[in-house]
Amino acid sequence: MKEMQAIETSQGTTTVAPAVHSRQLGAQLSGSMSFSSQMSKEDEEMSRTALSAFRAKEEEIEKRKTEIRERVQAQLGRVEEETKRLALIREELEGLADPMRKEVALVRKKIDSVNKELKPLGHTVQKKEREYKEALEAFNDKNREKVQLITKLMELVGESEKMRMKKLEELSKNIDSIH
Image 1 (cartoon, helix red, strand yellow):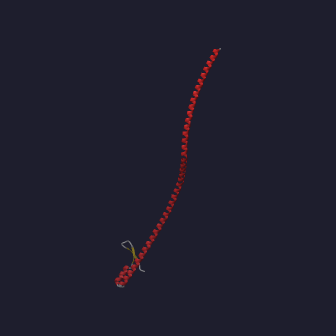
Image 2 (cartoon, rainbow, N blue to C red):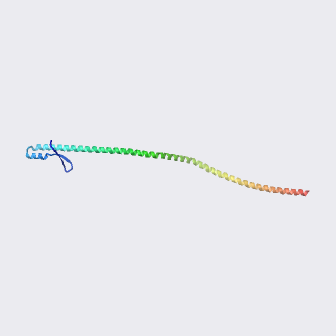
Image 3 (cartoon, rainbow, N blue to C red):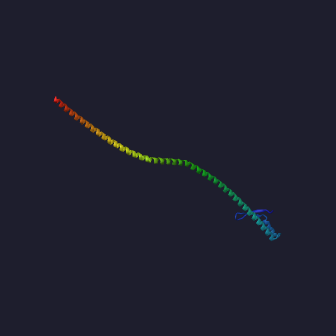
C-alpha cells in the first residue's frame, strides 16, 4: 500500500494525500507511464482520499453529536431531579401553611358565630337595662311618695294627738269645773 501524508489546507481542514505524489510526478516526467492512466490513478487516489477524509469527518461529527446528545440527556436528567426536588419543597411549604390556615379559619368562624349570638344578647341587655332603669325610677318615685305620705301621716297623727290632748284637757277642765 502506498504511504499517506496529512496536509493541512488554508481553511484549517486536514486532508490525506499520498506521500508518493512527488514520486508519481517524477515518473510522469520520465515517461515510464502514460499520462492519461496516471491521471486517472491520481484522480482515483484523490477521490479515495477525499472520500476517506469525508467519512472521517462524518464519523467525527456523529461522535460529537452523540457526546452532545449524552450531555444534553444528563442535563435533562439533572433538571428533572431538581424539578422534582422543588415540587417536594413546594408541597412541604403548602403543608406547613395549611394547618395554620385551617385553624385560623375555624377560629374566625367561631368568632362570627359568637358575634351573631352576642347581637341579640346585647339588645336584650340594653332592653333589660332600660326596663331596670325605668323600674328603679318608678321604685324610687314610689319610695319618695311613701316617705312623703309617712311624713304627712306623722304630722297628721301628731296634730291629731295634739288636738285630742287639747280636747281632753278641755274636757278635764270642764269636769273639774263641774265639781
